[in-house]
Length: 442
Ligand code: LLP
Image 1 (cartoon, rainbow, N blue to C red):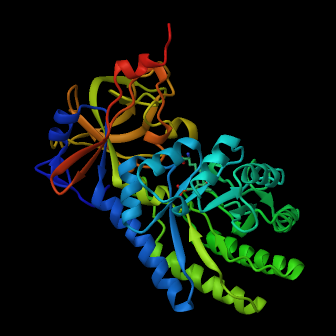
Image 2: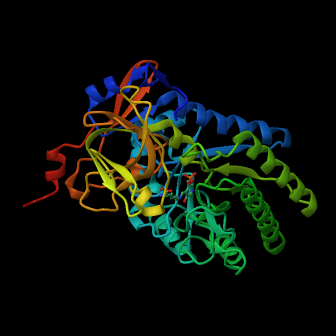
Image 3: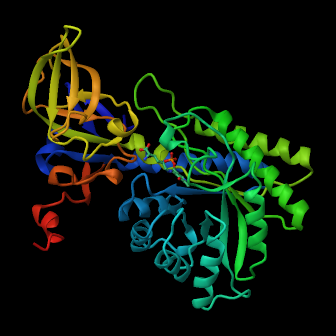
């Protein structure tokens, strides 16, 4: 739950505003974001990494991974807290630029960037374009030349590396295994070859190598192994070419707690462990530690946001095992949270507008879509008297919920409302029927 969430007489209160008031004013379903919590989590990454690395004389940049959730205000908050913004598309760049983020405080990722995306990144002097395939070198050089960039003013790039770490999590989100679309293989030598090839192009400035090993990773060891491999790669490139990369980007992927059974990554401890690992490896290899960057997304926005639904139909259904389960239907579903259907993701929920009966009932929270797989939480105990009109809040829906929302069944995407010290601000308004029909030319 967000840091500033409380229970008051059975009512869920976020940063001083009750769920009832929020729902009355903004409707449901809606995402409510604890602004202070977001800012504090951003500060935690910044300060913990600074504290761990500054004794080594190493600077750390924290890039907020906008794919988790990006809006103009959120980009601005991240910037105000000293973070940079990691983008992965034209649209994400557009939001960050609209927020006034300087290009050199942004990065651009993507395994299949368009020339238009490259042009925009180069024109706005995005601080790093992360190369994801050998052929992309020529693509960037072509666009850079067309925009008049030369050796005197080269385009800063990184090369995305797959370090081969399988860090758990769901298969779809383990992005650094070898048999997947991202990056260049470390073991296969492609990474070193591509880094070397970049050096042949004076229009490009090789900032460093990048490796993001996956998402929702709870074991800090995975990040240590990754850091070790990356520093070794940097030393290998130096041996082969004499070029010492000024930076390494260790990606994001820091796990959060979706349910009470899960343990979030301890950020200060992680920062310390990474600093220690890198010092050890640097000593072993007789090398230095370069500037480090990280790209947390989920761990900053995830826990800071909740989804609030209005309960509609509540239907007891006798399961195949002969138990009665309450199917609690809410006014959203897989269009605002595809993660359970896509990844088997787990969530927790609570009644938000009143205490409810002490007696609990086995329940399943389902959406309103025309699909039986439209399940938000398969098994949860809720007050047995939950009924139509009640409010239900689902925890930790900040990351990859609104950003992966769809208009399935032509539902309107929910708004995102920030709450801070008793005040609310609409960051993203609810879609309207006109929005929906605007692109349909009849
Ligand atoms: N950097 C890169 C290059 C990434 O690909 C990602 C996530 C991140 C940073 C941020 O990772 P985070 O700290 O948020 O775990 N839709 C999936 C997650 C996909 C993650 C893709 N890349 C989900 O809902 O779990």
